[in-house]
Length: 53
Image (tube, rainbow, N blue to C red; front, side, top):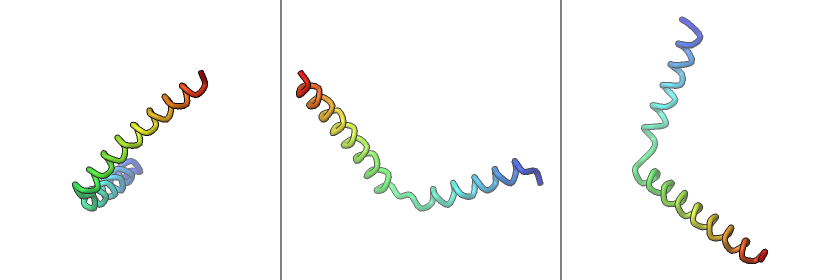
């Protein structure tokens, strides 16, 4: 077997095992937390810009 084939097989197996353990609830929670983090970051940067003026 080629080294690239071994790496591809290992990566494929890892991704399949991770994919099986991710639920829709986990995915939804991640999306919501990312959106919330983005909003808080934006709001804080705007607030800090106002404070500098």
